[in-house]
Length: 193
Image 1: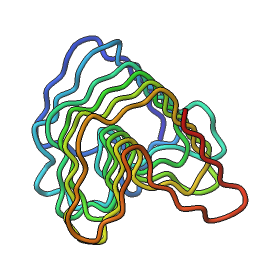
Image 2: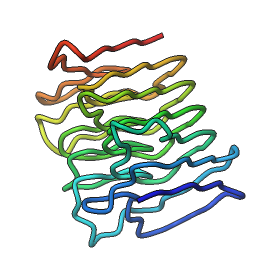
Image 3: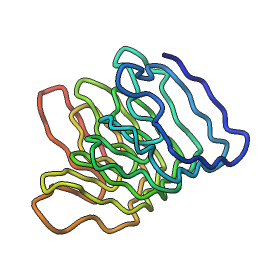
């Protein structure tokens, strides 16, 4: 499906179901925040999907027009069942995120990132001038987490980004202040500026 949206004012929502989930994944879109804020009070209790964020699953490795910019997310993006959780994108198959700030608290079972939960392999992703100021919680001892990105297998460039929150320190979880990566093939590249 295709989404092109522009935020004209601040928005507050409850019982949120992420945009782009399961069989209704967002493949091409632009979301211009215009400096506004979306406050998500809670995830819909009936939603038991794998992807949690403002957007659940986005991107298409053959497309280049996937972009989120100039937006702030606040509130609660917590799930006891979601595998991939991010302030803006739970699971990325190729996206650019610029000038965005996350204040929302995050919780998931496997990949929890302040901006993006998981980056798919063989895709191109860019995160520029983004900030995480939201708490990150893990629901399981084997969760992977990162202040900006929890887990990356694809090509990703992170520039001028900062994580302002402490990360979980107990248990066996794997994590890092900016990004936690796994090099899976010769085509993956990682750049942090």
